[in-house]
Amino acid sequence: MKKYISKLFLLGSLLVLGASCESEGQLTTLKSVSFPSAIEVSSSTIVLTEDTADDNALLVSWPKVTFPIDAPVTYAIQFDLVGDTSGSNAWEKAKRIVVGEDVLSKSFIAIDLNKIATDLGLQPDIAGKLVVRVEAALDRKIYSDPITLTVTPYEKSVAFGEIYMPGAYQGEWNVDKALALSAISKGVYQGYVTVLPGYGTGFKLNTARNWAQFYGAGATNADLKNMSDTDFNLPGEGSFQIKVNLNTLKWTSTPYAWGIVGSSTHAATPEDKDYGWNHSIPMSYNHETKTWKVTANLLAGALKFRLNDKWDVNYGPADASTNTINKDNGGAYDIGEPGTYEITFTINDVDPATTGYPATATCTIVKK
Image 1 (cartoon, rainbow, N blue to C red):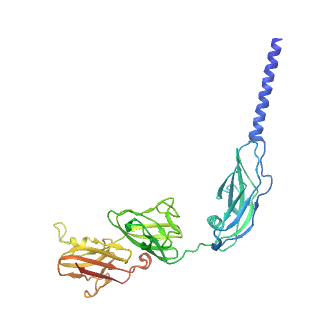
Image 2: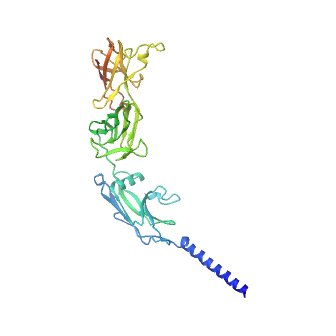
Image 3: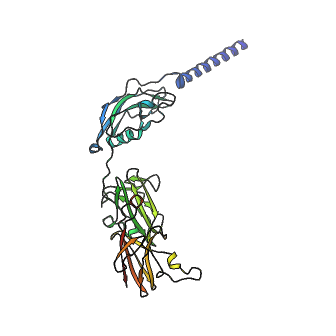
């Protein structure tokens, strides 16, 4: 009898264990899950414009997906090109936007949908095809059937004119008196700045002389991010050429300074009898007057101007009785009396990288 009871107990235990395993298998892997009905969009034909950039352009909604586990379901939306939604690499290039847990709709304003469309490769002002589907995730991911959209994106216009650079180099962050960077092509701006000793390197970039819209640093110091609280930073003290590209949302700084050079700037040394000709005294840029300036103690001797302590770009007077100086001219001004001089240099270099430097510039040399 004892043997019989023991066998019954063992058999019952095995049956219970088997039933438990079968139940768990059905719970986590065997029961299929799908969207109970199709997803919906507010419109399948969408024309985006910059004038309506902040308006709602698309609403995507979907039914609740029920998983066998009672827990919140996370939903996401995917956009892709029609040609990238089939084959072994299907949907790998999709733009995926996480919506949240148990949320059953998502709206997109025009500017956000425009970025999705152009990032995926749709051309501005041309109707193109996108597909959209919804992802539901819990213990696995499942997807709705896709819907095809016809979307016409727009090209964001970039105004010519100026942008502004308030920053610590001013001694105060004053956008009203900040450096103006002028447009040298569509969306590309250029200007010059000097960071004096003891001044900070932080700055912002503003689209007007106010704080209604400005750019700060994004993922890196070189990236522009709209309304970012993080300051950009220049490399340090000295003078720099600044270029800002609003098309690519990038900026660069390059060491850049005009200077005075010649026998009047420094006496000969035992090691270098032409020391004054071989070592420029750098000038500082005044962004309000758009002139380069230096106050220096000069000797009696010659003086002319060159860029970045090199002879690649230099100016000398064809007629030393005038304030006009000429590119690549061998002439020099004669400083007849030693003393302290205030010297300015003004040049209209619109875009040296593409148009070169102008034939003439102007200067003043005044004894203090």
